[in-house]
Image (cartoon, rainbow, N blue to C red; front, side, top):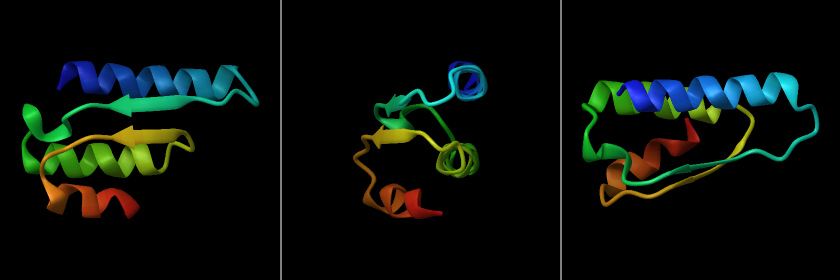
Length: 68
């Protein structure tokens, strides 16, 4: 969970300091170690971060939440 929070902070920092940069966020196996509430909150933050994001998961229901 701490790693995910740190990555989001890093993306936000890059968004603020690198105007015009094309940031790509790769999230591999999102549900692996996170509970459902934190996964939902993380996807919500990612969807509002204005970066191109690639998410892998074996949980099809989780992937349906990406367009939050």
